[in-house]
Length: 313
Image (cartoon, rainbow, N blue to C red; front, top):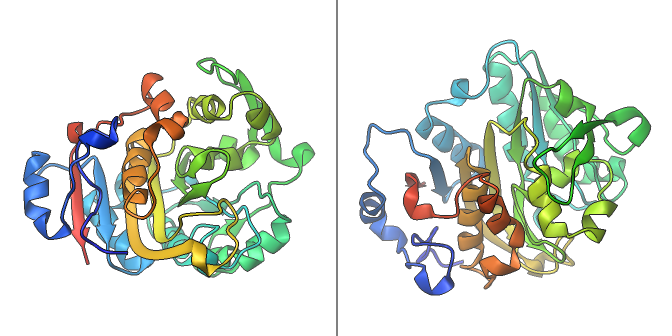
Protein backbone atom coordinates (compact mmCIF):
# COMPACT_ATOMS: atom_id res chain seq x y z
CA UNK A 1 0.00 0.00 0.00
CA UNK A 2 1.27 3.48 -0.85
CA UNK A 3 1.38 5.87 2.10
CA UNK A 4 0.29 8.95 0.19
CA UNK A 5 -3.16 8.76 1.75
CA UNK A 6 -3.71 8.14 5.44
CA UNK A 7 -7.11 8.70 7.02
CA UNK A 8 -8.25 11.38 4.62
CA UNK A 9 -9.94 14.31 6.31
CA UNK A 10 -13.13 15.85 5.06
CA UNK A 11 -16.75 14.89 5.50
CA UNK A 12 -17.21 11.19 4.97
CA UNK A 13 -20.81 11.61 3.93
CA UNK A 14 -19.85 11.94 0.29
CA UNK A 15 -16.84 10.56 -1.54
CA UNK A 16 -16.57 13.75 -3.56
CA UNK A 17 -16.24 15.74 -0.33
CA UNK A 18 -13.30 13.74 0.96
CA UNK A 19 -10.01 15.61 1.09
CA UNK A 20 -6.87 13.66 0.16
CA UNK A 21 -4.30 13.77 2.95
CA UNK A 22 -0.63 13.24 2.13
CA UNK A 23 1.07 11.48 4.99
CA UNK A 24 4.04 13.85 4.89
CA UNK A 25 1.66 16.73 5.63
CA UNK A 26 1.07 15.44 9.15
CA UNK A 27 1.49 18.81 10.84
CA UNK A 28 -0.83 20.52 8.37
CA UNK A 29 -3.46 17.86 8.91
CA UNK A 30 -3.31 18.31 12.65
CA UNK A 31 -3.74 22.06 12.26
CA UNK A 32 -6.66 21.54 9.91
CA UNK A 33 -8.43 19.67 12.70
CA UNK A 34 -7.61 22.43 15.23
CA UNK A 35 -5.85 20.09 17.62
CA UNK A 36 -4.17 21.80 20.53
CA UNK A 37 -1.11 19.96 21.76
CA UNK A 38 -2.49 19.95 25.31
CA UNK A 39 -5.87 18.53 24.27
CA UNK A 40 -6.46 14.80 24.52
CA UNK A 41 -7.50 13.64 21.04
CA UNK A 42 -10.84 12.05 20.27
CA UNK A 43 -9.09 9.61 17.98
CA UNK A 44 -5.54 8.39 17.45
CA UNK A 45 -4.32 6.87 14.19
CA UNK A 46 -0.90 5.23 14.16
CA UNK A 47 0.88 3.92 11.09
CA UNK A 48 4.07 2.07 10.31
CA UNK A 49 4.90 -0.02 13.38
CA UNK A 50 4.41 -3.45 14.84
CA UNK A 51 1.13 -4.01 16.72
CA UNK A 52 2.67 -3.66 20.18
CA UNK A 53 4.50 -0.43 19.30
CA UNK A 54 1.43 1.11 17.67
CA UNK A 55 -0.69 0.27 20.72
CA UNK A 56 1.90 1.92 22.98
CA UNK A 57 1.84 5.10 20.90
CA UNK A 58 -1.95 5.24 20.74
CA UNK A 59 -2.51 4.70 24.46
CA UNK A 60 0.22 7.18 25.38
CA UNK A 61 -1.52 9.80 23.23
CA UNK A 62 -4.76 9.12 25.11
CA UNK A 63 -3.11 9.51 28.51
CA UNK A 64 -2.53 5.83 29.19
CA UNK A 65 -4.73 2.79 29.71
CA UNK A 66 -5.32 3.89 33.31
CA UNK A 67 -7.88 6.33 31.93
CA UNK A 68 -9.98 3.39 30.74
CA UNK A 69 -9.12 0.42 32.97
CA UNK A 70 -9.25 0.78 36.76
CA UNK A 71 -7.58 -1.32 39.44
CA UNK A 72 -9.71 -4.28 40.50
CA UNK A 73 -12.02 -4.21 37.48
CA UNK A 74 -13.06 -7.29 35.53
CA UNK A 75 -12.20 -6.51 31.90
CA UNK A 76 -13.35 -8.17 28.70
CA UNK A 77 -11.33 -7.80 25.51
CA UNK A 78 -13.45 -8.67 22.47
CA UNK A 79 -11.42 -9.40 19.34
CA UNK A 80 -12.60 -11.01 16.12
CA UNK A 81 -11.72 -14.72 16.34
CA UNK A 82 -14.50 -15.89 14.06
CA UNK A 83 -12.56 -17.94 11.55
CA UNK A 84 -10.20 -20.91 11.40
CA UNK A 85 -7.48 -18.79 9.82
CA UNK A 86 -3.85 -18.03 10.61
CA UNK A 87 -2.82 -14.42 11.34
CA UNK A 88 -1.33 -14.00 7.86
CA UNK A 89 -4.80 -14.25 6.29
CA UNK A 90 -6.19 -11.35 8.41
CA UNK A 91 -9.54 -12.98 9.09
CA UNK A 92 -9.10 -12.41 12.83
CA UNK A 93 -7.60 -9.75 15.07
CA UNK A 94 -3.81 -9.84 15.27
CA UNK A 95 -2.70 -12.00 18.24
CA UNK A 96 0.28 -9.73 18.98
CA UNK A 97 -2.10 -6.83 19.54
CA UNK A 98 -4.30 -8.89 21.85
CA UNK A 99 -1.31 -10.14 23.82
CA UNK A 100 -0.01 -6.59 24.31
CA UNK A 101 -3.45 -5.32 25.38
CA UNK A 102 -4.01 -8.16 27.87
CA UNK A 103 -0.63 -7.42 29.45
CA UNK A 104 -1.46 -3.74 29.75
CA UNK A 105 -4.79 -4.50 31.42
CA UNK A 106 -3.06 -6.80 33.91
CA UNK A 107 -0.42 -4.12 34.58
CA UNK A 108 -3.21 -1.57 35.12
CA UNK A 109 -4.52 -3.75 37.96
CA UNK A 110 -7.45 -5.55 36.33
CA UNK A 111 -8.60 -8.38 38.59
CA UNK A 112 -9.46 -10.53 35.57
CA UNK A 113 -9.01 -10.15 31.81
CA UNK A 114 -11.34 -12.32 29.74
CA UNK A 115 -11.19 -12.81 25.98
CA UNK A 116 -13.81 -14.54 23.81
CA UNK A 117 -15.70 -14.52 20.52
CA UNK A 118 -18.78 -16.32 19.28
CA UNK A 119 -17.05 -17.91 16.32
CA UNK A 120 -18.39 -18.96 12.94
CA UNK A 121 -16.03 -21.92 12.47
CA UNK A 122 -15.38 -24.42 15.26
CA UNK A 123 -14.29 -22.30 18.23
CA UNK A 124 -11.46 -24.63 19.23
CA UNK A 125 -9.89 -24.40 15.79
CA UNK A 126 -10.47 -20.64 15.59
CA UNK A 127 -8.90 -19.98 18.98
CA UNK A 128 -5.86 -22.11 18.10
CA UNK A 129 -5.31 -21.16 14.44
CA UNK A 130 -5.70 -17.43 15.10
CA UNK A 131 -2.89 -17.55 17.65
CA UNK A 132 -5.12 -15.67 20.09
CA UNK A 133 -5.65 -18.49 22.58
CA UNK A 134 -1.91 -18.93 23.12
CA UNK A 135 -1.36 -15.16 23.18
CA UNK A 136 -4.02 -14.59 25.85
CA UNK A 137 -2.77 -17.36 28.12
CA UNK A 138 0.85 -16.22 27.81
CA UNK A 139 -0.15 -12.65 28.65
CA UNK A 140 -2.03 -13.60 31.82
CA UNK A 141 -5.61 -13.48 30.53
CA UNK A 142 -8.41 -16.02 30.44
CA UNK A 143 -9.93 -17.18 27.15
CA UNK A 144 -13.40 -18.71 27.25
CA UNK A 145 -15.77 -20.25 24.68
CA UNK A 146 -18.98 -18.61 23.52
CA UNK A 147 -20.63 -21.19 21.30
CA UNK A 148 -23.19 -22.67 23.67
CA UNK A 149 -26.41 -20.73 24.21
CA UNK A 150 -27.38 -22.66 27.33
CA UNK A 151 -24.21 -21.87 29.27
CA UNK A 152 -22.85 -18.62 27.93
CA UNK A 153 -25.59 -16.05 27.32
CA UNK A 154 -28.33 -14.03 28.99
CA UNK A 155 -31.14 -11.91 27.55
CA UNK A 156 -30.76 -8.14 27.71
CA UNK A 157 -33.18 -5.44 26.60
CA UNK A 158 -32.41 -2.98 23.79
CA UNK A 159 -35.10 -0.34 24.35
CA UNK A 160 -33.58 1.99 21.74
CA UNK A 161 -33.34 -0.69 19.06
CA UNK A 162 -35.46 -0.54 15.91
CA UNK A 163 -35.33 -4.09 14.53
CA UNK A 164 -33.74 -5.61 17.65
CA UNK A 165 -35.53 -5.05 20.95
CA UNK A 166 -33.61 -7.67 22.95
CA UNK A 167 -30.68 -9.99 22.43
CA UNK A 168 -28.78 -12.72 24.24
CA UNK A 169 -25.29 -11.51 25.20
CA UNK A 170 -22.35 -13.49 26.53
CA UNK A 171 -22.19 -13.77 30.33
CA UNK A 172 -18.64 -12.42 30.45
CA UNK A 173 -19.85 -9.15 28.91
CA UNK A 174 -22.70 -8.82 31.39
CA UNK A 175 -20.44 -9.51 34.35
CA UNK A 176 -17.58 -7.27 33.19
CA UNK A 177 -16.93 -3.86 34.71
CA UNK A 178 -15.62 -2.61 31.36
CA UNK A 179 -14.81 -3.96 27.92
CA UNK A 180 -12.54 -3.10 25.02
CA UNK A 181 -13.65 -3.67 21.44
CA UNK A 182 -10.76 -4.88 19.24
CA UNK A 183 -11.95 -5.71 15.72
CA UNK A 184 -9.90 -6.41 12.64
CA UNK A 185 -10.71 -4.15 9.68
CA UNK A 186 -11.79 -6.20 6.67
CA UNK A 187 -14.19 -6.67 3.80
CA UNK A 188 -17.46 -8.47 4.56
CA UNK A 189 -19.82 -9.97 2.01
CA UNK A 190 -23.00 -9.10 3.92
CA UNK A 191 -22.20 -6.02 5.99
CA UNK A 192 -19.67 -4.83 3.34
CA UNK A 193 -17.26 -3.70 6.05
CA UNK A 194 -16.42 -5.49 9.28
CA UNK A 195 -15.05 -3.20 11.96
CA UNK A 196 -15.98 -1.94 15.44
CA UNK A 197 -19.79 -1.88 15.14
CA UNK A 198 -19.89 -5.19 13.29
CA UNK A 199 -17.67 -6.77 15.97
CA UNK A 200 -20.64 -6.62 18.37
CA UNK A 201 -22.12 -9.59 16.52
CA UNK A 202 -19.55 -11.77 18.27
CA UNK A 203 -20.99 -10.98 21.71
CA UNK A 204 -24.50 -12.19 20.84
CA UNK A 205 -25.96 -15.63 20.47
CA UNK A 206 -28.49 -15.54 17.61
CA UNK A 207 -26.96 -13.90 14.54
CA UNK A 208 -29.52 -15.53 12.25
CA UNK A 209 -32.03 -12.88 13.24
CA UNK A 210 -29.60 -10.16 12.09
CA UNK A 211 -29.28 -11.64 8.62
CA UNK A 212 -33.02 -12.02 8.10
CA UNK A 213 -34.20 -8.73 9.65
CA UNK A 214 -32.20 -5.88 8.08
CA UNK A 215 -28.57 -6.68 8.92
CA UNK A 216 -27.40 -3.05 8.82
CA UNK A 217 -30.11 -1.87 11.23
CA UNK A 218 -29.54 -4.80 13.58
CA UNK A 219 -25.82 -4.04 13.77
CA UNK A 220 -26.64 -0.48 14.82
CA UNK A 221 -29.34 -1.72 17.21
CA UNK A 222 -27.04 -4.01 19.19
CA UNK A 223 -24.61 -1.10 19.59
CA UNK A 224 -27.32 0.71 21.60
CA UNK A 225 -26.76 -1.70 24.51
CA UNK A 226 -26.02 0.51 27.50
CA UNK A 227 -22.66 -1.10 28.31
CA UNK A 228 -20.50 0.63 25.70
CA UNK A 229 -16.84 -0.26 25.13
CA UNK A 230 -14.43 2.05 26.92
CA UNK A 231 -12.25 1.94 23.80
CA UNK A 232 -12.50 0.74 20.22
CA UNK A 233 -9.11 -0.38 18.91
CA UNK A 234 -9.17 -1.17 15.18
CA UNK A 235 -6.49 -3.60 14.03
CA UNK A 236 -5.37 -3.00 10.48
CA UNK A 237 -1.86 -4.39 10.63
CA UNK A 238 -2.96 -6.64 7.80
CA UNK A 239 -6.19 -5.79 5.96
CA UNK A 240 -8.39 -8.23 4.06
CA UNK A 241 -9.72 -6.02 1.27
CA UNK A 242 -11.70 -8.64 -0.65
CA UNK A 243 -13.40 -12.04 -0.25
CA UNK A 244 -14.27 -11.31 3.36
CA UNK A 245 -15.06 -12.20 5.99
CA UNK A 246 -12.97 -15.38 5.64
CA UNK A 247 -10.70 -14.62 2.70
CA UNK A 248 -9.44 -17.20 0.25
CA UNK A 249 -5.69 -16.63 0.14
CA UNK A 250 -2.88 -14.21 0.96
CA UNK A 251 -3.73 -12.32 -2.24
CA UNK A 252 -6.80 -10.93 -0.43
CA UNK A 253 -4.59 -9.23 2.15
CA UNK A 254 -2.51 -6.05 2.20
CA UNK A 255 0.10 -5.26 4.82
CA UNK A 256 -0.79 -1.70 5.90
CA UNK A 257 0.44 -1.54 9.53
CA UNK A 258 -2.19 0.79 10.94
CA UNK A 259 -4.07 1.11 14.24
CA UNK A 260 -7.06 3.42 14.84
CA UNK A 261 -8.32 4.05 18.38
CA UNK A 262 -11.32 6.00 19.69
CA UNK A 263 -14.11 5.89 22.24
CA UNK A 264 -16.51 6.94 19.45
CA UNK A 265 -17.54 3.73 17.71
CA UNK A 266 -19.17 5.47 14.74
CA UNK A 267 -16.20 7.79 14.18
CA UNK A 268 -13.70 4.94 14.37
CA UNK A 269 -15.69 2.99 11.77
CA UNK A 270 -15.98 6.08 9.58
CA UNK A 271 -12.22 6.62 9.75
CA UNK A 272 -11.58 2.93 9.09
CA UNK A 273 -13.83 3.11 6.03
CA UNK A 274 -11.86 6.05 4.68
CA UNK A 275 -8.67 4.12 5.24
CA UNK A 276 -10.15 1.01 3.59
CA UNK A 277 -10.90 3.18 0.56
CA UNK A 278 -7.18 3.72 0.04
CA UNK A 279 -6.99 0.07 -1.00
CA UNK A 280 -10.44 -0.63 -2.43
CA UNK A 281 -13.36 1.69 -3.08
CA UNK A 282 -16.35 1.29 -0.77
CA UNK A 283 -19.02 3.99 -0.34
CA UNK A 284 -20.53 4.91 3.00
CA UNK A 285 -24.00 4.16 1.66
CA UNK A 286 -23.00 0.52 1.20
CA UNK A 287 -22.04 0.27 4.87
CA UNK A 288 -25.43 1.36 6.14
CA UNK A 289 -24.88 0.63 9.81
CA UNK A 290 -22.35 3.47 10.12
CA UNK A 291 -24.80 6.13 8.95
CA UNK A 292 -27.57 4.53 10.98
CA UNK A 293 -25.30 4.66 14.02
CA UNK A 294 -24.91 8.39 13.60
CA UNK A 295 -28.67 8.89 13.18
CA UNK A 296 -29.18 6.93 16.40
CA UNK A 297 -26.69 9.27 18.13
CA UNK A 298 -24.12 6.56 18.79
CA UNK A 299 -21.34 8.75 17.43
CA UNK A 300 -20.37 10.90 14.46
CA UNK A 301 -19.25 10.30 10.89
CA UNK A 302 -18.01 13.91 10.63
CA UNK A 303 -14.27 13.49 11.09
CA UNK A 304 -13.75 17.25 10.75
CA UNK A 305 -15.72 17.71 13.97
CA UNK A 306 -13.32 15.70 16.15
CA UNK A 307 -9.69 15.96 17.17
CA UNK A 308 -7.55 13.36 15.44
CA UNK A 309 -3.92 12.76 16.27
CA UNK A 310 -1.88 11.01 13.58
CA UNK A 311 1.38 9.30 14.44
CA UNK A 312 3.90 7.77 12.07
CA UNK A 313 6.42 5.29 13.44
